[in-house]
Image (cartoon, rainbow, N blue to C red; front, top):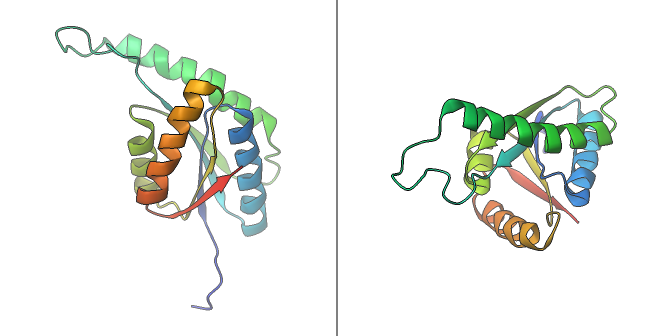
Length: 148
């Protein structure tokens, strides 16, 4: 080993905010320089009460609708906003707790680098993303780049 860092798999967790789009642009620049593959990931957090009063899971079409909506509004916006020329990439939407889902995704896909924006889109999102960023800083299974 020559001591040089050469990431092959870069995961970008995005919430569609300006900061996460900027983080995606930084990640694609790193990917282009290293010939890395970029995985764009967004996590749809189920709303409170999602599982119903009796704890029954939602019907499959409800989950599917939530995933499609999240993917359409977040991933497409992010992907269209960055220059992906010469960068191999894929996009995935997960449903669940953002930090846990991001960590699992990085483990399952052999991520060398996880890139996130420092904060989310609004007051609530900033609180949520701040706590997500904090959890990722402690538990990410790979190097973490937090982009301001």
